[in-house]
Length: 297
Image (cartoon, rainbow, N blue to C red; front, top):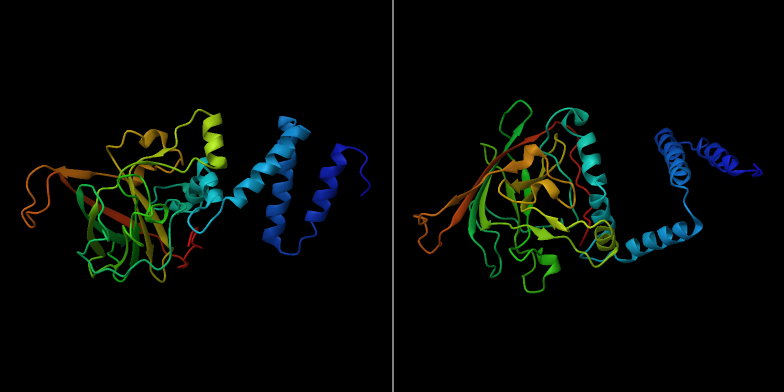
């Protein structure tokens, strides 16, 4: 089509998109063009703003490394990750779900760890926590043989992939549920932390006068054939930033009690008070078991 005016641009592009052979790809591309062109008209995007936007997208791609994924971080900062998660789980967003976004720090091949062991693999300050996770199906029956991959940040707010002072795979481990559907382990109590702000996401937060903090949480990825892979962020109920998570990831179903204990820990006197316990039950939905692409190596 020879372009005569701005309306012809959209008509011409949509005509090409409609020729896409794959029906799902066609549906996505047609809708994308309608919304993208509509957005440009709605905000009356200037040429200068367009050039700045393309530079920002270039910067996001260039900032990806083996230990950092700026695009995943941006998706969370815009609420996209959380929205996609909630629309695809919990009866298509109609009910509560134990599912949450993957986040930018999951790695493959966490060390296989026996139930009851610690995932603290190098000297890491912090109060001791004993975690007990139970996995059930939608009918409430316990699920045996679930592979549960757990990871969390240290008390200085860094995952081990960001922090050269931590040994490789510190605060990470992979467990198998027993016949009661449980895994249990010890670690240090996770703390809240700021997301990286030295890239495009940091510029966005600064421009909007937003803080970069995430409330304290533990990640758990559960895999079992016959069930949809369950990714959960389990948040501490006493964190002051639950309402203002920079990644919009806090859901009511995944706020749990990190119970504080101030008495001595009788089973191991060397553990100083306070120490904590976390008990949480997570629901896996029937579906196809697929592992996501790791955002970092």
